[in-house]
Length: 243
Image 1 (spheres, rainbow, N blue to C red):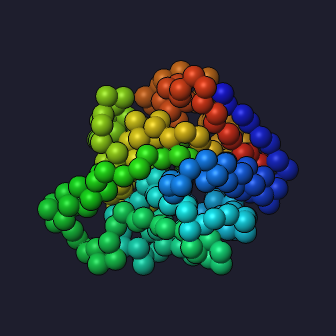
Image 2 (image 1 turned 180 degrees about the horizontal axis):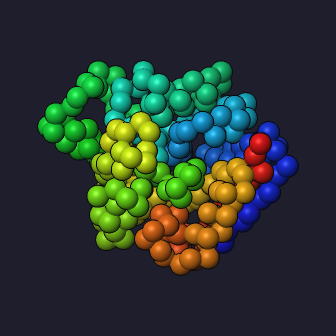
C-alpha cells in the first residue's frame, strides 16, 4: 500500500519522515538481536531529513547503513554519496552506526577493468538483506542509479536477476558528473521490507503520480518498483512543495 504524506515545507516533511523511520527501526531492533539494515540515497535533497534523523534516539550501534547507489569516486571526493552520509548523518549519536561503503578510499581516478570487477565482487558478497530502503527521485524520474538510458538498465531491472549491485553508465549528456555508478538492482530493492521516498516540488510529485499510475513502464524506473511491490508492502512518500 502506498501512503502519500504532504507537508507545507522541507523542515516538517523531514521531521515526520525521520520520526517514522526511527520508529520502524526501533520496532525491528526490539524484535531481534541482529543489526537492522538501512539503505540510504545521496544527493542534496535529503540534507534536512538526515539532520532530523541523526537526532533520533536509537541504538545506533545496531544500525547498519548501506548505500542505495554510489558514483565510482573515492569517499573523500565531493560527489561521493558515502561522504555525504558521513557529513550529514553520521554525526553525534548517529556516528555509532556502521556505514558500509561501496568504493575504497584509495580508488583511482582511472580504474582498470579488473579493479571495477573486484569492487562489484566485493559489493555482491553475502550480506544480510535490507530491512528498509530510503529513496529519492531524480529529475528524469530515476531511482537509485537505475537510469532508463543506461545500457545496463534492462539487466539491472530484470526481475529474474540475482545480483545485488550492478554497474551502470548513465548518458554523459544528461548526467553530471558523467561517471559510472554502482547501484542496487530492482530485485535488491524489492527484497526490502519497507520503503520511503522523499519528494519536493510539483514536478517530482507529478513524476511520482505518473509512475504510480503507469503500471510497469520501463521508461519510468520508479513504476517498475511500485508495480512489483509485495501485496502487503507499505511504501511511504513524504512530499513538500519546495521553494
